[in-house]
Length: 559
Image (cartoon, rainbow, N blue to C red; front, side, top):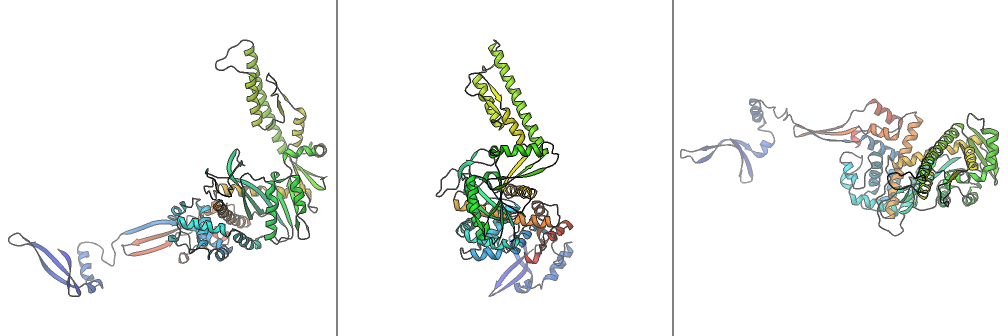
């Protein structure tokens, strides 16, 4: 038996039909019962009959359902919800949309948001973002609008309105900055770039990498406040001189932030006499820019006599950190000495020298035995070969100023420069700073400079958690857009860190996002006809983290 739908004029009827064979064995059909018109059946007129048949056969009734449950793969939403809430609270959503909405037919601000969040949640290529969104739900985002071409077009838009976006970002960050005294840290790092093609106005240049070696790269400069908040970034050519990037970057900062007093804290690589003269001329309101700059180690020789007097008076018997102040070229010269660091540097250098001398003695002994007639397996050792090998070992250990290898001699020969060694021992554990700040004690100056290590942590976040490198884009504008996306991710990261720190939470932003990422969006279909959705029940730890950063908890109705 089976159900058959027949037509009579405009109407359709549902009939119960039986197949059988007549007396001659031919297949025939006969109507057992007419159940009624199709529209009445669809309205439920035959449900009682169907339920009776289901009960007789021991199956669930229509009301009880089929018993089948289909689960749609869960998608993480806790981390993207938190970042969306922070993005809106900081004003980024409205601020950036005002600039980007007239540039494209699609919502470029929302796509920018997706790319920034991806750097913090699961860094992927622009093409990989679609794969990420298969298991991540970003609030307020229409998944159909996230295509590879739209993402690239959004990056082009960022380049077109880069200046306006940076000015808008500055306006949004101003409330978070101390207007009276802002300690500004500036440093640069190198970002490895891939590809061999050459583009117009190329920024990928071969230069000395911070990670060692000569690589094709771009330079990224970042300015941040003493609280660790990044406020500006700049992309430079990969072979740009660090000292030449400082002054133009500072002028941009002073033009965008109404800061009454700025103290620049910069690393050793940014100090040069030319830079000091340029910095001296920069005005902040009605007074000169103030700065704290570290003297690079290669320049310590200019301060030998000053260091010698300070070392003899205060450092030889010191058991804790000591600081001193001198005058140099019209600036304050601050010297700090740490005995523990001095001892560690002294021991490490002596171990290196001892190891090299042992190698030298071994090679010299072998040369002497060869001269005495002894034969060894393999290629014969030569004085020139030993000299070259030893010189490379000394250079790799960065103590060529202490161990002098005689490259002009026909015989292997070297000496230790005792004067240079004593000078190195005097420099051990010392930090030399140049400043024009008149109202800070030497200890405060040293403390301000040591805070510069925080920007180094920011670079590590960019390279590890956010994965800014390597850069696979080849067009200069897209490289700058990629840097802006990563910089915005760093801003969100640091704001989260500041909030966690203010509540004495021992979580990193990365760990916090990992924990709230476990809040997932679930969808289920019951009996093939009923659907339901919801969020994972939050743990006390997850609730506490949302409260710590002062952001609303996930709500299914607002997804």
